[in-house]
Length: 468
Image (cartoon, rainbow, N blue to C red; front, side, top):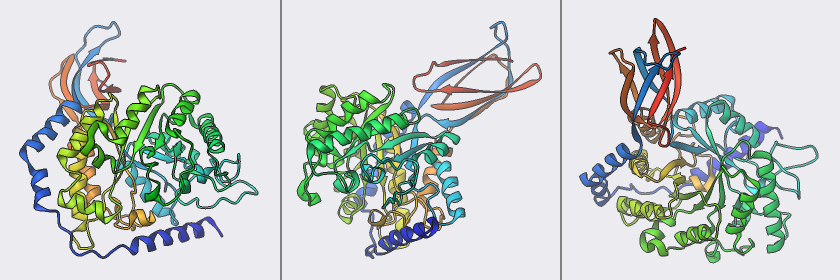
């Protein structure tokens, strides 16, 4: 069976699973929730947080060859890219049956995102002992279940070409179906040895290209074996062991993430520092694990959580800030690592409800000092089986844009963007802008020149530009 035929079958299965979604009665966002998000005090808090945490004051000073001030004219300062990471997983790059679909996927991805999550699921990429599927199919080997598991070098090539930051996901995950290769003996000591070998192999191959890693995925839920209805075979203390092995083999400059599932928002809102997720992160840090970033997921795959959201019983603005503030006590940046906001019901207004929550949560997260990245999960409807039963993408399956796409496009590319033009000639300009990379265009002595400067959270507040 050819690649196109295989992809067509995979997409058919995903689409049938999505098409089987429950035909809900019309779902409404409760008045309680609407009132919460419209609260002037909350909106002022969000606005001030964005102004104080995502923007800074800068000076640009023009110098001649003797390092003396020189006046420039026709000065323009235009944002090239954000410092903040707006991301999505990129598992379906070149993964659609038709070439025009692949090009539409790329075009729309690049419009919204500057950050991509690449797949490293152990069960998919080591289907035979010591044989790795990083480069695609190998002679004499038949690899299965590779839908949304493309060769990473192709993804890296695309990301480098377009200047996308990259994250690898995950280095360890206790869920047997995704993490344990079928050939692996169900023995904790054997699994630990091979888990470390897999981490070593990834570091050997990809450390030079990828700087951010989900080292431990969903470890605080591994105790809940009854919920997942199977035996957890991963070694005891596997999260700590994965962090220690990763620190041994990866560059010290890489950022390592401990990534928690959606219930983290409920547990930490209720128990704060006594929640199992906070306790695990704190314990790892106190024992010397290189935990650089706290990762928080927020998926609404099921109707129970969706209804909690719609009714304001959980996932409220106040509780969301409380969770972020609690984890901020660990003095680590926070990444919102995986997000799915579904269409709220099968009524025509369902996509508008999805957009409502996308807009409000993105603004809240963007306003918080510790949040440095936001990653959406399934970008296109009908491509992720049961996880997409309620159509949680930003694009419909025909690649037409949903309102949620337009909302994020407007926020990232218009509202949260700085472009300036100065009419008066001067040797120094002062301004306030969103953190990021900027192109400065100016004219000195009749010659127009372009220079690139980084105006970021940790850069100097005065940038010197020398005339050629």
